[in-house]
Amino acid sequence: MWPRRVAVVAATGALLVLPIEASAAGWLSDLFKSSQKAAKAHARVASRKPAHHTKHVAATKPHPVRLASLEPPDLSRLALESSPYGCDPLKFRIVLDVGHTADSEGAISSRNVPEFAFNLNLARQIEQKLKAAFPETRLIVTEGRAKPSLFTRVATASRLHANLLLSVHHDSVPNKFLENWDFDGKKSHFSDRFSGFSVWVSRDNPQFRTSLSFAELIGKQMKAQGLQYAQQYTDPIMGHYRFPLLDKDDGVYAHDELIVLRKSQMPAVLLEAGSIINRDEELKMTSPERQDAISNAVVTAAKDFCPAYLGPM
Image (cartoon, rainbow, N blue to C red; front, side, top):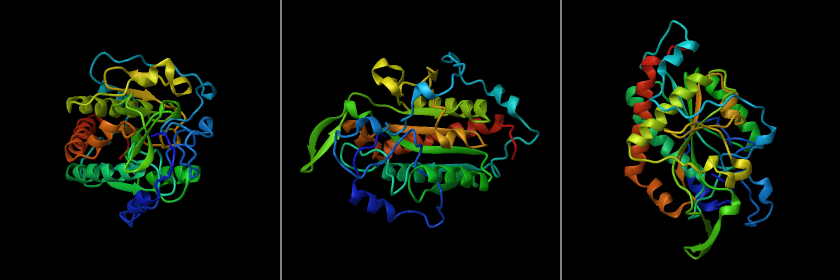
């Protein structure tokens, strides 16, 4: 999830499978992940953001932090943002946002595959399973580059009248943790130090509490699938990339500056499905078993979320 170099061949492959209907999503955040075409491995480190988090914590306004929840998600909170409609699974529209674009690919894996390719593949798996329970599920894939596409992505979710937005990503590490290795005769980078999924919300989203409830359910179901969440984002070694942990049981973090989360009018959650810069976890992320586990976790979370959702339909 932390951008480094562009893998042209892999990106071209990803382009060949873009859905025709897909018109907008975008590079996740001007503060989050930025693709670079100049592949000088250690140059301009300060300007590269960890795929999912290049924002400056000191610049963000203070928020009261909800300490880690010690009990299962309190779905009764959804009633605080309610209307009389409720959730009809046949009408409830979940929009799946494929993180990054073919032009701004996000992180590069330890085996030189762009994050965008991972995001697209997993999002399609999730879409297929979600549609069985929520037929109105929509997949959006971005075109274009960087910040403008982020706002287009938000506008697309609104145009589709999304009840819920889930952005699909894969994680990496800050450049300072990268190590060199040769893969398939090519100089590559890896970091086996961290692994795991994480779930993200913005406290500036107008439906923050609803977003948080869905995020907690995803984290809970990921754990039920035997997966562990990434805990490094609270560690001082992360420097500018430390974030508040809102739920210590289920791996939900706050990142208030992410445009897709902050600007969306509907509940919005971002899932970092796992680390692709970790060599072992990258291999697991490509396996049908891991993709099934993640897809099942998202679908079960949506099914648990729907009966408690009271927002506008």
